[in-house]
Image (cartoon, rainbow, N blue to C red; front, side, top):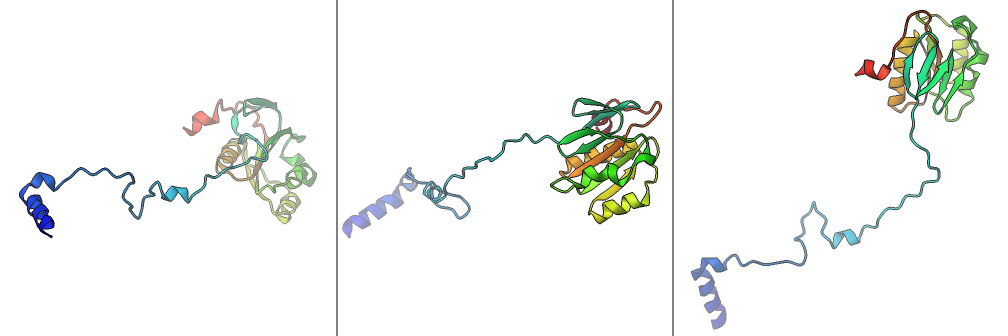
Length: 184
């Protein structure tokens, strides 16, 4: 007991002894931080990819009266854009659009949520039975002029929506060299 009293009086007499440098081999535990002992409880996560597929969304770079530039590929004439495919579309004008010409959009898996239709330089009405057939199959149809349809398609794809497009090039002098430059 005498030793304890002697050490206590010595500790009070010399303030430099109060803050002894102490090195811990472990970090003090705090509720919101993990200490080295805690991470032993957690195992590393391993992910195995079943299919390596690059995340490439369709993007309309530009358009003119002859066709479209899509992901660096030039397409002449009307085209149909699917989530990971690009096809020539065999229609001449909005009057040629039928249930049969839209059939490729409802045969796909996963289901397309919306089809954006570009009807040239003006927004034109589609046949009511065509719109009704798409609605019955659970696919929304957005009919616009081609410049706005291109921008809408790019926007929906950028959001990650499962989107298709049916585009007819605008006739005459309507053209845009790059949609990316126009949106910036």
